[in-house]
Length: 395
Image (cartoon, rainbow, N blue to C red):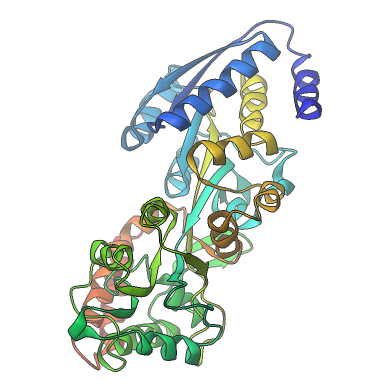
């Protein structure tokens, strides 16, 4: 820690005049607010600069930044923004590219890609999340390694008459089930050397049809996932010990721990006939800088101080977020939540960060939901209709 603070002090030594930084944050968890406060205090003591922290609700940050940035009234730094807003703000030219950051190599590269638009990094990753297969070790002592093992253990633990289930997920939720699409070679937008091509939509290819067919089988052929199984019902069944395996994310792990369940975290095994591994969406939040800020060097120093290994470790201890610094993950290898979700995130697919993703969710979700309402659907028509609707609205 001393070495890190010394390096930061040296970096700040070049600041000849004290500056005042304005930082917007949407943090409302007490522990995370306290963490940010401690980081600000340390920075102020080392630099002699002043930091003013303003709480802005997450759903208002983007609109307020677009309104104020060019007028010089916005923040210097935002802590933090999710990747699905990065593309919009990058296109609007109100956030600063950070390709020169010295810390880029320290981050999980999946998270770096998530905050990259047109080959430029627009944020310093702070934390990430994805879904994973969470299993009850009392019912599933060893994580299934193959699809055959997965079906075997799921069916062994299923007794619908008794309200017991071997595997549950919300089959109608496109986000939760993207891992099946990716495993079969489906994708949202084509990737051309790090730049997403919104004209190339891969949600109606043969892989997408196979994904929907598999999900339909989980309900009607394998009889594992009942109709109307929502995310809340999935979680409730697991907390009661009535579900052996579920798909969920870090957001539910606090309640799972409180329930006293001996859990494991792993990937869903590669589905039959898949061309790749199950690779769910990865969501990332990062620290970003105002492109119209007048103190960019100072703002960059402050931002980079928030993602050092020391800061990442203390941030995880404050709120339990999954760190994106690989070294910190290694230090937390004994933490099953960090280790489990960390592996999934590293092998996951960054959720598209371009504005066109907003035109994808509705039609795609409708197709996924319709595909599991009755056996043997016409998946080609469902997906072609969805993609046609997307292309009508994507400019």
